Every structure is written in C-alpha cells, then in structure tokens.
Image (cartoon, rainbow, N blue to C red; front, side, top):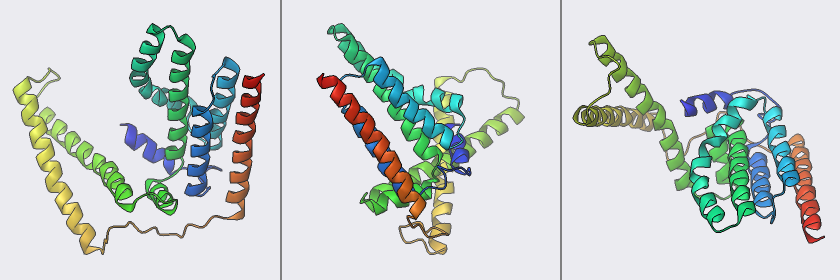
Length: 240
C-alpha cells in the first residue's frame, strides 16, 4: 500500500530527514513556482529540473526507482489535458504539461517521504495553513490505516472460510464494502474516544520541539539560491 510505504520512508535518517519541515515546504514551493513559471520547458530545462528532483531523492536516501515509479500516478490525469493541447497543434505545450506534472509529483513525494506527517502538518500550520485543514488531512491519512487493516482482516476471514480468488459479484462486493465501512466506523469511534481520554484538544502535540537551526537556514539559503539561479538563467535564455 502506497501510504504504508511512504510512512516507512518518512521514518528514515538522512540529511533531508533532519531538516525542519518548514524549510522543506518553502523549498518545495519555490521549486514548484519556478517549474510552473518556466515558459518553455526545453529538454535542457527539463533535465535541470529533473536533476534537482533526483538530488532531493538522493539526499533523502529514498529509493530512486520506486519513487519515480510512484510519481507517474499523476500522468493519466495530466494526459487528458495534454491530449487536448496535442489536438490543438501545440505539441510542446502537451509535453510540458506531462513533464511539469511528473516532476511536481516527484518533488512532493520527496517532501512527504522525508517528513513524518505530524511534523509536516505542524510545519504547515506554522506557515499559516488553516488548522482545520491540517487536522482533516491528518485524520483522513490516519484512517487509511484503519480501513486497510479492516480490509485485511475481512480478506483473511474470507480465505479461512474457503473463499477462493474468484471475482465477487456486484451484490456481494457491495455487501463487503458496506461491512468494511461499518467496521471501520466502529473502530474509528473507539480511536476517537481513546484520543479524548488522552486529552486531545484538536491539535496533535509533538514529543520534541521544532526550531529552525543554523543548518536549516543554511540549507534553505542554498536551496533557494540554486532554484532562483536556475529559474533566472532559463528566463534569460528564453528572452535571447
């Protein structure tokens, strides 16, 4: 499951894992803005942005092939708009849409793959993101584990009763989904009661304080300088 794999990635120990979440969010935004505002994404420009994304993957100690493969999940959605651009006779724009969406997805995966969710959401709150939004995202993400666990239990129970790998009929599949969500809702109620009993007040507290240190500032300055230099050089080349 994708969310389990990424959760395991975020628990690693690397140069990028050690950096403050706010620093990584700012660098991600700078990268996305520079990529999105590049007017003409030539092969050379694409290679430069791809090199930045790969550098982030390597600094984070993430599996290169696995992450690049997972980033391709956005391509089917972007391909719809790329096809329209291609039909309109704008092949460079179609290629640019695909490349930009793929590199953006890879950059986002680098962020979430090197930052535990609690630290990431706390960093977003510190940068001005609405607390309600971050709270909803956290609950949605955490309850994916609840639903997946219940689905695994139901599958194991069905196999123990002699259910083979044959495809389910529509009525049986609908019943299985209804039972899955009923059990997940019951489990979620128990989790919510346990959180309230432990003093949950609408905000997840971290065990350690989050302060931006000197290394974080140096990393932020170096990253922003690199992205700005790349975007400026591409803009100069575009105007020539």
